[in-house]
Image 1 (cartoon, helix red, strand yellow):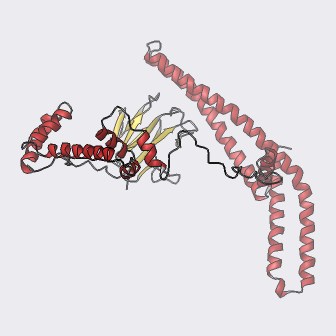
Image 2 (cartoon, rainbow, N blue to C red):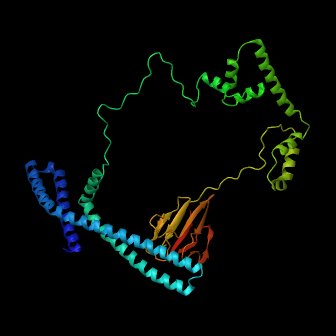
Length: 406
């Protein structure tokens, strides 16, 4: 039996089966209007007819799925051939760039490859249509879903079953045994201060050691002081170190007027060229705020706020019945004939596998050619990279998109 005859026969069986199922549902809905015995007799008759149809559907479904598998095999071979032809086009372009092929020779070879690509893509489109028709009727009969469920079961895609006895119980420490210490774990509670104290290098002066320990964790400095021995000599030594540190800080605020600015610039010189641009502004700030203390923060220039991105669309076949709209949500949108592009163009052989891409950068949009064989044009002009303002026509091979911003 020819495939077309098979599909037609299966379609008729599915429609008859679906009609009987709908009648059973409607009979149940009208049960309260008729005698239950009559409704049951009619439903039983419909179920008997459905059983007879199922006997005819089973072998037909087997043939239908066999056709689907054959189409899948053919598609895989054609897609591999498509990739080879893509590589051949890229090779022609490279040999032309290297000077091996003249313009005429390169165009001739590209035309030959384009004709082959047209044939391959035409067959792929036909396969997609055929499989789409087969799948439509198989899904209507519930056969497609049953097959996928059977495949998942065969592949072991089932819910994990807990082993008998349940999960193993957590091991418990013997009674009376102190918890084992694990090197590298962060101390908690009272151990935090001791850990901080141990981490202070012994070579640092006492005041610097205390400051280094205190900087490790908020509140650790006070906890460390509590753990220090309470002998008068050691307490006086700690207080003296603290006073020395405070005096050092006070000395920073006693500098002559403007001296703090010089010290700061000497310690943290601005990058080359920045002082030429902002020199007068920095000086003016120093004059306007003479009492600004060392360590105070002052932003000379506010940070530039990033402009929020506007919603963008690429529209193919604008205004036609087969108009297609693609919303650009990603920072990079790849366009080409390859299957792993965000926007795939399958019916244009002059489109490269990865032809170009649209980039979103700081709220602006750019189109960038990806070294394609036939180039990318914006409003009829061949480009390498171009900023898009909205309303441009982007030509990729023989396919035209309108770029729009909302």
